[in-house]
Length: 268
Image (cartoon, rainbow, N blue to C red; front, side):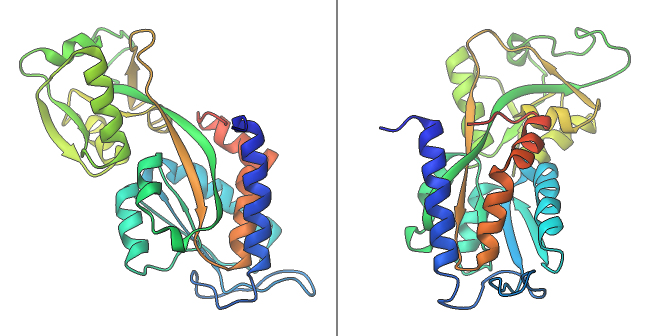
């Protein structure tokens, strides 16, 4: 088996070659306007990227990298729970690239839709988020440690079980031997985070990058050493549009990887 770094480079090369090589086989499935830049370059009707909600902020920046290289290209982004994305694409929703949270949604994607080998572009770690509240005392709220989740009256929100963040939350709670009462199951990590931000929950299990993106509205309660739950983000090209290869190139470039790292994502 290749090490991840070698497999990543090979997968990118294969994916780019296939995406560009197939560009003349049919019309693009994503976008509605625009075209490729540069004389003689492959043309595109636009680029549509569907991605996990926890990638909302970071992929907007990656899209700007694509637009800078191809100013006439229309780039459309959509964000939802990974299970929802797989369902939408399976039902014919237009898309050129999907970026999913976790290997399970990828396994549910119709393999006939995938061009080349999927590429893991980032990783993320589960975090226990609580409202920031007044001051900076980490013990000011009702949840000062993960053990507090088992106390009566604590309102814990998590992602629904079929979402990657929901599966990660269940793994964490099982590993810690905790069985807290769940106040609500939210569709994705961003919806879970919003409950915490609004004070409608005492704590929520979300991705570490969501805590950073909240810009001080929430804070993370430290988890016990060795309790990390890490999740991969595989990217799959699902159309023959050459713009899909441009997006892969952008997200795996030095600038794209810096965008991911600055947002708190791990790099494979």
